[in-house]
Length: 222
Image 1 (cartoon, rainbow, N blue to C red):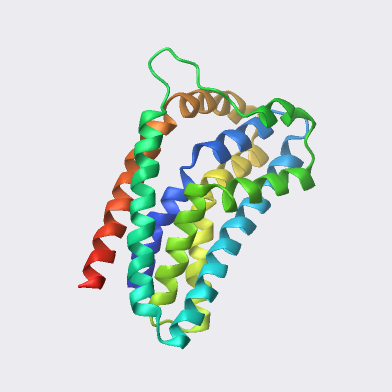
Image 2: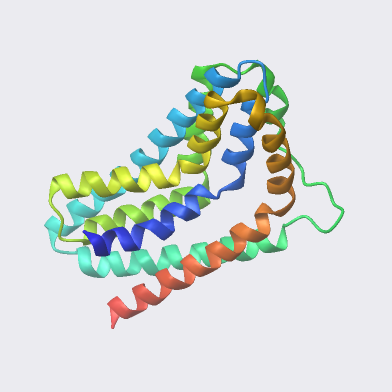
């Protein structure tokens, strides 16, 4: 179980530093319906992460029962690694240049009027349907399936992965709930920094994770 956790935690960190969910929850915390919207958004993020990982885990388990899992898992790791490397290159090339204001999605302009249910739906979409996050969740599900774990251990690893991956959304929500007036200024500053620099940070992490997955996939195919 420890080895599997070691494989999935870097993937969870990759999901956790995705800039758009972090900026989205910060915007929600600065809006009128702050706590309701942000709590719904956090719930949606957690459901999306756990759902995408569990679906992959179940699918990999079905491959294992058919006897085709080892080669399939290796090719899956290799493919995911290459895709993450391509995403890293894309993120790096599309990062805002010095002095350039990065574009914001249109839905963020309507964040003031968002409710808890709609925020939860956005959370699911931003995590489960975001290509980078989805690839990382798929890689985590495949890693969990490849370990010789019991059902309880698999559930525990999925839970740890989900908690770590959603932590960058959960921490601002918890901090806001405990001390609204103290964290508002910090949230505004963090939003500005993430908007300006997150693409470069994310590209670096995707490059590292992609290279590791490619190396593991090539090793397994030897």
